[in-house]
Image (tube, rainbow, N blue to C red):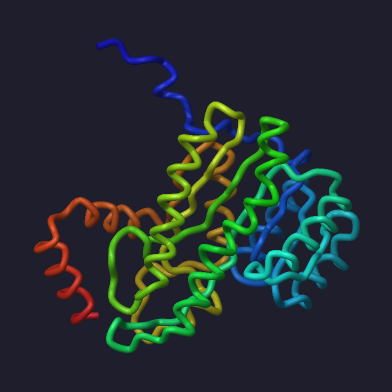
Amino acid sequence: MKINPSFFRPLNKPLSDWSGQKIWIVGGSSGIGLAFAKACIKKGAKVALTGRTLEPMRNLEIKYPGKVFVAKADVTIQKDLSDAYTRIAMKLESINMLVYLAALYSPMESSDFDQKMSVETINVNLTGFLNTIALVLPEFNLKRQGRIVIVSSVAGYRGLPNSFVYGATKAALINLAETMFLDMKEKGVGVHLVNPGFVETRLTRKNSFAMPMIIQPHEAAKQIIKGIEIGSFEIHFPKTFTFFLKMMRILPYKLYFYLVDFFTKNN
């Protein structure tokens, strides 16, 4: 069987010049989102930040006038998000990259099910993403260009303790990213899936267990930039940790459950 040469090309078009990029970062008020915004600005891009906490985003806007624009919004409220998008689109004139990082997490076991928190988690992590792409996809499809960067998590690879509902939302984002890539690849729109391991953020500070190979937000931002530049579909890090979890994905349930139980009880 003859292999098509395109098989060896990157799944997405590599990005070498950030100076023409106009990036909408949803969930940009802290952690990876804020660090990624700073990295993009240094690369020469213009950035629009949306989040629920205004002050850190506003500080960045003051520091980089004309390069950063801020619109406070709640991703779970469609009108709120739509108004923010309208203001951002007017400031940037157009958007050619969407980065979705908005996330809600609270450690939860199935036996301690909290319905209110579960619904809120689904609304932010999953429904919020759908609310966001509903705004940018028409423009991307019309122009046959653009990039969508979906930040999920290795928690979406398989079921894990203390990740009830959160892990399910991240698994859904992984599935959505895969489907979107297949649907959009012939339409000029790139799709990148980001699956970080542990990153030092306000979310991971809620964990009471040891987090192996945890990295800082600026390191995560650097990895995302690198992955976009080389045209990767999945961007996962730190690789020593994520490769181990990838191997766990292919194990039969009996062995997988045994290993997860072993590692968590000996953590």
